[in-house]
Length: 289
Image (cartoon, rainbow, N blue to C red; front, side, top):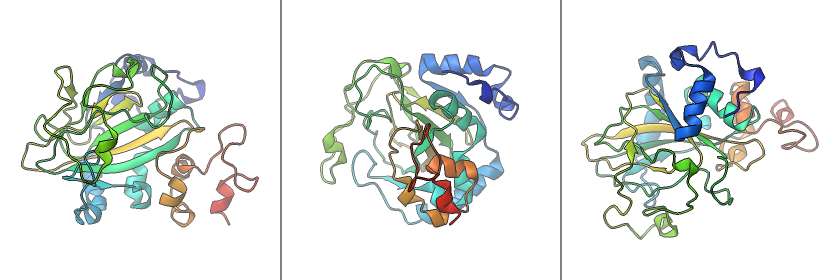
């Protein structure tokens, strides 16, 4: 992970670095493919987030297939849902690592809430930048943030990761996502992806895990009697196509009200020398018409 000179003022995120340098955290990130920070969000922030999501989770729309989770609620396009959720996208700690890995002109590729209901089964193994058709091993083309809004535990579906798997050459492992996992009809039998080397990301509410886009991971099975809620903003390089079409998910009339940095992450920005222009001009001009 390269720490660019213009991003070396880390006073804002110092409390979460716990006396360690950005280079030290970056080396751990490069080695393991993930890092975790405990209790980054306050209880007040967590309450605000839960309240902002409540109307959408209250609709109880469940997943359409095995990948989304047939007993999971997913809320997409969070930047358009509430300013509170938009603020989370530009949280200085998550964004610091995204920028260090992907560049200052990185974009928001996707941002969704995932609420695992009791009885949800384990998700297929996958890595978040797999939609870029570039054979492994290769550099990561993404950084995924996993914000624990509820506690994530051994029993309620904590995200499972395979440490250092971002370096593996395999494009497929046992129990990996397959085309049938996006079928509205077909279901998996049992847990074909069960592994002894999997690590569960057990986190207190408000904690944050950052993962490389090439890290193999999956949502766990919820064997508890309560739901488990996380939010996952995912970032990509400024030259890459975003997973969610942000210009439609967050149209100009909604984007105008958002902080400037969020606007840039949505795509109202330029990747050098002029990638992203609109009618020959900077895309921010669309917001000032």
